[in-house]
Structure formats: C-alpha cells, structure tokens
Amino acid sequence: MPIVAFDATPREPMPGRRDLLRGTLSEFVAMTLFVFFGCGAAASNAHFSDGDWDPASVTVIALQFGLAITVLVYATAHTSGGHVNAAVTLGLTVSGKCHPIRGAAYFIAQMLGSIAGAAILKGATHGDAGGEDLDRSGSLGSNGLQNASVNLHNAVAFEFVGTFLLMYTVLETAVNGQSLCTDGESSILGNKLSIAPLPIGLAVFIAHVVCIPVTGCSINPTRSFGPAVVSNTWDDHWVWWVGPCAGSLGATMVWLVMMSLEEPEVVTRRKTLAASPSAGSIDGRYTEKAPPGTLPAN
Image (cartoon, rainbow, N blue to C red; front, side, top):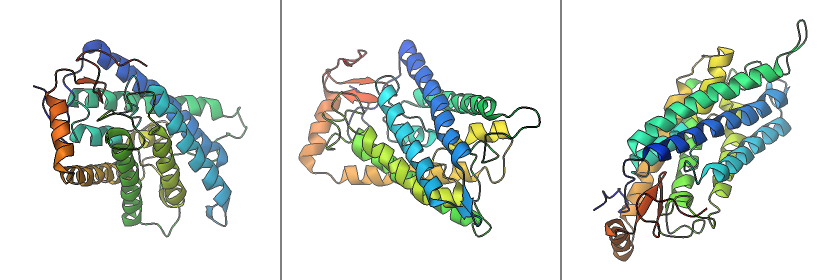
C-alpha cells in the first residue's frame, strides 16, 4: 500500500533513476532561463525617481517574472512538476508531494541553474573596455534593501508574505484535486486541462509589485543565489533564504490544516485513491489513471 501524505493522498515513492535525471535536468534548464529573463528584466529596466523605484519599471519587471514563471511551469510540468523555486520544492517535500531525494536533486539543479543564468546574463550585459555595462541594476538584479527606510524586519516580513502567497497558490491550484484549475483528484500539474500555471504566475506578479520597492523581491532563494554569486553581492543575503523558506513552510502548514478539515467523504475518497493499485506518482505529480512507474500521456 502506498504511503499516504498528510492530505490522505499517496506520497511520492522513491523516484526512478531516469525519471529523476529527466526532472533534475528540466529544473536546471528552467532555472537558468528564469534567472536570465527575470533578472535580465530587472537589470535592463531598473529606473529610479528621487531614490525610489519608478512605478512603470516595477510593473515591467513584475510582469516579466510572472510571465516567465507561467511559461516555464507549463514547459516543465510534465517533466519535473514545474517547481523552479527552492521554496516551492521545500513546501512540496514537507507536504509529501515530492520525495526528499527528488527535492534534494532539484535543489542542487536550481542552484546550479541560477548561477548559469546569472553568468550568461553577466556576459550578455558586459560592456566593452571603457564602455558602460547594460546592467542598470549594477548587480544583475540581485536582491537588497531598496532604500534607507527599509530594515531587516521589513524585508523578512515582505518576503515571508510574498512567498506565502505563492506557495498557498501552488498548493490550492496545482495540488488540491478539488481546485477549479486542475482536472482530476490529486493531479499535480499532471494533465493537459490544468490552468494552474496561470494563477501561479499571477501570484508571482502580485508579490513582485508589492515587494520590489522593498527588497527587489526574491520569494525564491535560488533566484537570489546565482546573481549574488556572479556579482559578489552578499549584503543581508540570509534574508532571501529565511523569509521565503518560512513563508513556504507557513503556507504548507496552513494548507495541511485546511485539508484535514475537509468533509469526511472527500478524505475517504482520497484514502481509497491512495490504497488503489491504479494510483501512480510521477515527478511529484499524481494521476488516478496511470499505473505505478508509468508516465501519463502528455
């Protein structure tokens, strides 16, 4: 009998080698692209007015991050589950939707992908000798306290709430089988009818609109890591880990409590699914129809 997760659906079993390698490579590629295009927007569109962020610049950068995550989650959902964020991987692992081995592999891939994306961005924006770099942010879009009135307490709070919004949206739209966004019980971005990447992208956009003027908006520790490494920008770097990870765990705990309060018949149906030999788990995504060890049609 499959091990049951906290929401009475099957936990992901130990991933197969080929499956794990495929998903890990997918996360590496996705994070490389996410950092290049997301931080690239920050690097090329950073504008300030009297020491504060220009509203149009904030909107452009926030929209770019939101669109980038929407595209990349759709592109990788069938191979890796579309995490593209260490905080999301953490939440899915704690909730039982991602095996710890997969979570660790994804984390390493995301870290390396972030460095690769930042390195490519550095090379692309570097000016000729004596010329001016194209990087208007001066640090490849690295996160930091955006003005003198922002303190560490403010930064952690904004990062916590922004990541809470993202993780809660992921769990309720991409994981919860009762969601209007995902067709099928406990299907994590696992079929063609899922529109979960759209609200996930909107959550990223909303968080960036609010957080950019305060922290530059991380809500993704691995997004912050690569630019920090390549630009050697380490001021208050712990904030971009503590805030997002705490926000992810907070959202996951709230979601698990809410799932435990569902109607008994819903919980019973999930337990039946967990005990059914027809239930499968691939890449942290569950489907009622796929037998164990097989990929759903995509």
